[in-house]
Length: 366
Image (tube, rainbow, N blue to C red):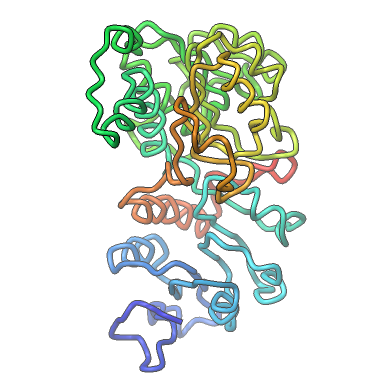
């Protein structure tokens, strides 16, 4: 198991332990034991230590479930992780809380945590900036025909025809429909609004505009003031009829699987551009391909797919009106810094018995 080197690290490469304060060592109450299956930097450890000064923290970059099992050999109270091994609860019987490093919880709730009584929290909110920027970048690339000019560049072709240039358009004045108004959807709406777009939004309960989840200052639309109108799930076709651009930011649950299918794609305004950064199974891929082939959809920006990696035989690879990426829209250099900022806030809440942020509703699946 490969761990970050530190003065406290053993020669055998065991996980680094940050000892609890001496006051805790003399107390009969055992210190809170925190395990991170992702290696942390000194700055990230210090942030967590400041949030929970009396805790013991072990962190190591775990590449598989066997390495996670080794990390859990001494048990733990709190876990910070991407991966959930099937035997998690038997290996950590005293586990009190799991902080996921992902915004989605579908992978965790399909395993041992699906019926757990302990809280599970997500990293929702830390992806808002990079994924919203990715979404707007994809829309801009399509509007300004970068997807065509980049392919022409590879062919050493100078595209200058009037017919081609007449297809370039602005985002300003067009309508964006946000399907799923969580932290990512809200930041996408803020950026679209700044570009002069009209914004419509769909959410499970359209009567509640505010978002109680993690939201860094200056990011998103926490009060829900940007959309011209909110729509409920049963109104999605009505919303899509007005949209020139659509972004799908839904989590994958039993209720959202194939939420956007053939009827919804048929309802979208002809020539519209659809971006999916949620989960591949939220959008019916076969129906999407047909809508692209028929010309009803102008194009699609896809970061997620029903099967990943995307099979080499998928027609999506060859479609000129498709911009696709390998499930990386949330990637950014500051990912773990943001995740630890959120985790530190939840640690402060946990140690003072206050409500945690981003708690997963096991019935809703997010």
